[in-house]
Structure formats: C-alpha cells, structure tokens
Length: 297
Image (cartoon, rainbow, N blue to C red):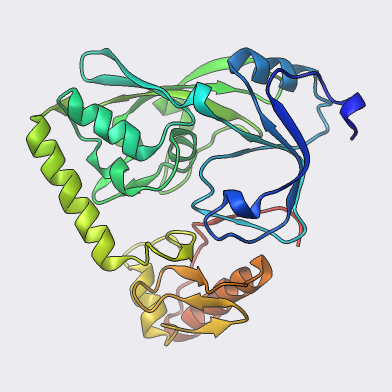
C-alpha cells in the first residue's frame, strides 16, 4: 500500500510507524500504517474507502498487548483527543469517547455523584479497550455499567450496539472483527463524591501495593481460570522471578510479565508460553492469555 492507494484523510496517516513507544511493554515492531483520525467523519470516510482486504486494528493505551516483533500489517487506528471526551448526558449516565481513559471516566463519575465506576480507575486503558475486553477489576466489570456503545464497522458504517449484543463473558465480547468503539454510555448509581473518592483511593493504594506499576509491563497476563487465581497457579509452579532473555515474571505479582529493559516481544511471549507449560505440568490447568498478542512474529 502506498499513500496514493490509500483514502485521503484529514487526520494523520503515518507509514511504518513504530508501535513500541505506544504500548506499555515498550517492545515490538511497526504498524504498516498508523491512522489517527481527526474526528468521527474522518474515520468513517477512511474505512469506507479503504480496500476491504486491508486488515484494521484499534489501539488504545496499549496496556494489555504484545505487539510482535514483525509488526502489524494493514492499518492500526489510534483515537486521539477528539474521541476522549466524557460528559453526563442523563441521570447517572456518562457518554464516554472511545479514546477516554479509565481515570477520566471514574473522576467525571465522582464529580457528578455517580457510583459504580470506581473500578475503572484501576484499569490502564481506554473506553474502547474496556468495551471490547469487558474490562474489570476490584469487583466491577464493564458489562455491569455499559448501556450501549457506538461502533464504526470495517465498512465505515456507524451502529449503536446495546450491551446484550456484545454477548459478554469473562474478558471477552463478540464485537465484530475490525470494529472500532468510538463511544459508550455507562450508567452507575447515586453516590456521594467523597465516598466515591475514598473507594478510588482504596483501589489505587491496593493496586500500588500489589502490582509492579513502575515497570514496563502489560497488566494481567492470564485470565483467572474457574475456581483459581492465575497468579497463585503461576507461583505454585515455581515461576516467580523466572527469566527468559530480557523478560521476567514479576516477583511482586506473578500474573505480570516485565520487560527488564531490552526484551523483545518474542522473549515476553515465549516466557508466557513457558509459564503456561509449567502451570499445566504442575496443576493440570491450562492458562489462557488475557493479553492480546498481535502482528507477525
């Protein structure tokens, strides 16, 4: 694909854009093209005109993702400021742009006396990622607060999907392939701003105490299997501190992998697979990746 064969845009279109600086692990290859749309109309026009054979992938804060070293073919779409607004639209309901952060959503909810969204404070990502993954932590999940979401499909059409249409399960939705979440409505319940802040502080302190937040990491690596905690299975399999190349299993929280400095994405993914193998041998439990792995090896 050349600039000449791509649709015209009003936003920013970058060829061979390095993705490592945009993801938490700080590793991995480049996007064949990185598209940062100016607004919703720009995104729709681009996808409508783009050859349907070209793959499209949305990128949020890159907190729960391994971008493989061979890079990502096609177009990676990153939503910027135009998609990062949060406002109260109805009683106890927030309209949130797909690029808005969990911190912005939860603090706007607090300011408007809306409880039930405090858990978003602890998820390092954007609304688009939360909706796609049914993001959750500290007893809350997106399925509990989502009313509906606006999604641009691969053909550029804009549809509104009610929560039931996403068929949510644990850390999974049936959002169509190539679809990009541009907005979502979240509804909470009445609360006092000071109580909401206190809960956000509690979550923040708990996270600080238990997770390696100052490191290059990707958040929770594996889903919690039914009846088990992933970190415990990893620990019991003797993987705490396990190292492979520049990657390591965190000693602070064993469901986190770390890039110690110069790890390749191949190091990180291979370490994860080794952990899965050891856990299977020790406990018979097959751990499933929670981290999204994208691109070419």
